[in-house]
Image (cartoon, rainbow over all chains, first blue to last red; front, side):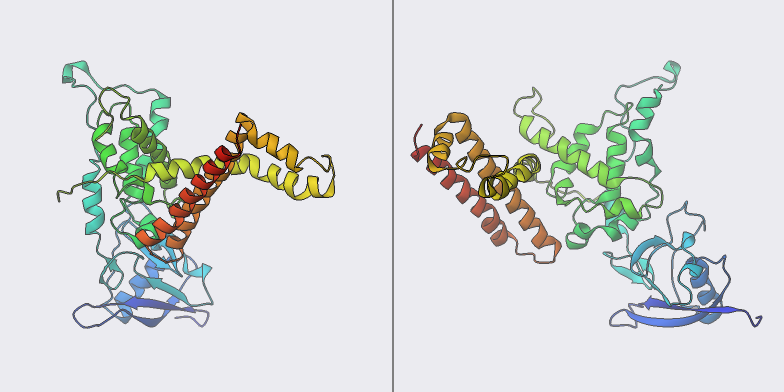
Length: 251
Length: 123
């Protein structure tokens, strides 16, 4: 290490369910350079200071959505958050809010996976087509309707940001609603009535109080708050008009 | 996948009343504050007797005036009730059914009183 080596204090929330009664903080002194991300900081801790530290990561470039953490209280991808922006102050790293901690910075995302399955995140074809009929064609306008919502990487930062999910974990939540909306507004899809049942339910969009922090923290510039609030209108229309429509609206 | 039974939320009723009240308060609220709080008491822009008893009685006896007063009072109350109920939730008070009954019950009470008073005042 050169004399100019900068050292930053990283405070990590530790929790080993077999040993610890409750999560506690531990501070590490980590030498860093200006190009080091917070993820690289915790990797340094694991490699050189304490091999028992657990966290998820993979791509290091904001594509895989694995390394979400609370950094100084803000839901962030640790791979695109830089230590230099906190130095010389201490930086605080904790597991994502509103989720049960599995170990250290690793959260249990089972609840989200169930939600993801329940929205049927795939195209349910509007009409059956044979291979010989060729591909589905879409206009640029039809693509625009859903494209931004398809950028979700399931990093769960929006869930850590959502106060309503924090209060009621049954709420389907921002990312799942954004993905649900992505398929509902796809011109090739015909599964809307199946998905609306979830939107209309007590677990659905009306849990949202339009805080909007979910869209702010999204690293992929998805606007889940927009999807949720468009579906409040859809759901309210369905609620009042279902008696007038021949099919009785969505279930 | 875990099978769940989904219960349809009745939130759209309250959300629609909240939305209607919000729209109305945004459109008419500032104007009403100006008329009732500034223009009439200070007699600027509007004559001082704009809100005199005979004028207001005539306004409340007119079918359109009646409808306006009812919509303003009832929808503002439903808007406020919903806002207060969810703000309680936001600041961590999960009073549940009790708070819901209190918030929406007061709005309902205000709505009924307004309806009764407007009908009692005659046409």
